[in-house]
Length: 262
Image (tube, rainbow, N blue to C red; front, side):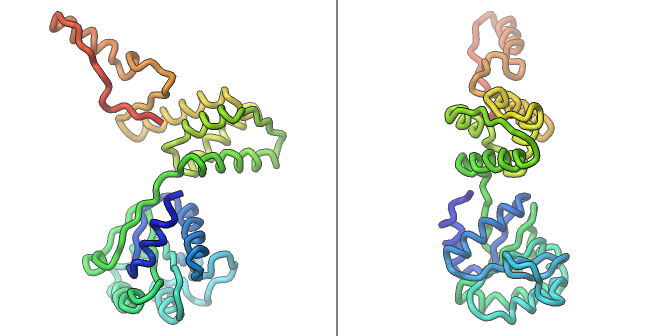
């Protein structure tokens, strides 16, 4: 997870709004709940479908689904709190919603009260941009990915017999190959590896590498190379080097410039 102290510091810096661009809504929600626990402030979540509710409790505040009504409920609450309002930025083109946010800003700037807006892309009107801090939710690190592996194994084991054949060193290698995945992508990759033969062992490390390569081929021009591979064979370098030698009559050393490692 991102350093909780960084996010806590941003909340305590009296910004009334924080914008987080991420596709990992669940992970952001969990992160904010931990920050709220550390700061000892209540944590609320709002969506246009469910309304505003206290994190961990099932029932939402009555008639709080609409953005302006949700913000009115936020304004009526006293004391410090963190409010995660998913997709709120989509409704800021409504003059009343934008005005309500501006009205809330002075009071929120005096204590630890903050509205966190999250989406894959958060675009704000010019009047709210100076009042908003932007936070990057980093991809999961080694410790979080290791927890993901253990959790997925446990979940799969509740449905079928699963054999865990990874030594501590193998687990570290597997986690290393998962670096660069979101939590969701890591969960899917580990589940796919387990479902092949109801086993998670060292042989599945190669599968993780292939999944990562396929993702990069679909999403970008980058090519993933695992540490075990020969760089001379990457991206057609062998043929490029032969062509350069033929054209110049000299031996050239060609090194990759855009290779991604785990």
